[in-house]
Image (cartoon, rainbow, N blue to C red):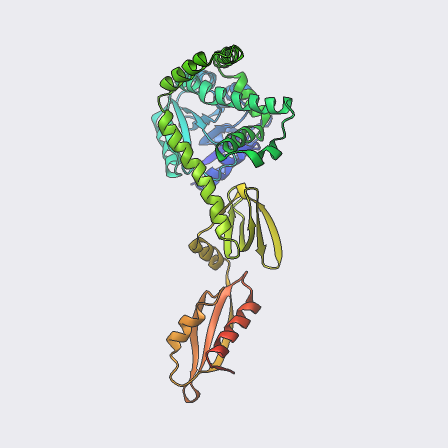
Length: 413
């Protein structure tokens, strides 16, 4: 019998993400709205996927109804208060964890993502969830609630604050970000993209993160900003250099960070070069967010847009949304969507080798397979069945194969 799971707050983006994740693992999932009621004693697994500011209230309502042996976990970005509420509210025997996926709902799966797990109570539930996530390709880190919240106050609280403040500054300066991209080096464009990445997501989520992280982190940041401004306004180069050197020494990872960021920059440059090299050829493009596939002739490529001729229509795609598929990926995709066939019969010159003819026909664009299906010995006449993909241009295939056969001296029957 399949496990039964309830996702409270399941109609939000991360709730929907976990619904898909659990269903793919053959778990029977019920979505429960924040204000809806459910009989939680019926479920083996309950996921709390509501905003931080109401998480404890929801746990207080849901946990007392759960049965012994069931597993309860939340997916919020703070841990101390939710963990405390679980221990207060959950009956003995309910297995408790607190989980923090370090990714958003735009990620297609957990492959390569980090998930922080805070064990609270019960070894079986811990093993079950960690196994579930690791089998999906996630990297697991276990932290106590206190350590998690301290680390996240910097990793999320400080970095998000810096990005949002930068975005607000650009707005205050009336700075034309779109136009300025023409003058940016790759490293600054990546930094601006990270600002845009945060600004383009749910502001209520980021408000809840800021309101629930340690204010002393932001205050330290503002203190350092003010000190730097004072040094710069005083034209004190020595103090500026000394400050930067101290920060670099404490950072300790500056050289490896430089190398990692260079790899990121070069990967972006290489991707665009690959797009440009593909102009004029038939390639497959996959949307990294929706999974939609476009196969056709690439007409143009820029840092912003890819133009592809897909059958009889032109399609414009955003460069940041798509990735090139390998030839093998394209072939597998097209085969999975079926094939079409066209038969060609011709009288061949004496001594013609059908094996060689098969190899020659196989070089024609859009040909997937070629086979001999008939042979008339007296006239050296052969019939070949040529397959192409469902989305292939069958009329072009017919023309090209016919021209090839006539060109090598065959008489079409």
